[in-house]
Image 1 (cartoon, rainbow, N blue to C red):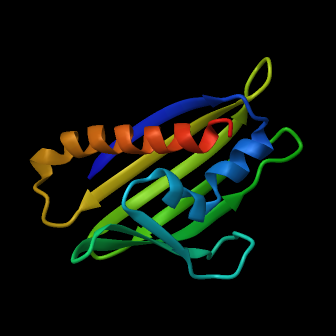
Image 2 (spheres, rainbow, N blue to C red):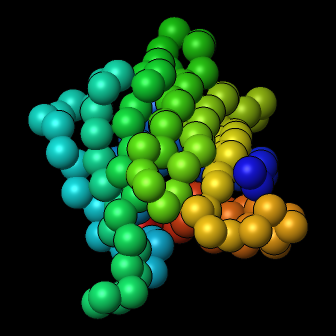
Length: 146
């Protein structure tokens, strides 16, 4: 499995950064060739299921995920969400934490462990690099001022 960690700083307060990062359908706006469908009724909670479909035409795959930890920020406590990837092609987990930053704004920590079926393990280092790059860009876009 490929493990990566990325950190980003947001000008937004913790609650607003949290909402931007955990609006699952909004991820489709920032990740190319991806559509996100939330399967369970809002609001997000432990047990929420959603599917990211990535690719084009017949060269696409589903990445079903379940929210297994849902702790929104509040009263000086950072927000933390853990997702488990439930697919047959992509497995692993992701954790998103949003902390208050000294001087205002917030700090985002994104950890992910990903495994792609049929991808040889010697390519895990490249997969981690690609994941850090892709999800780093996604986080930056989600946290960008409109």
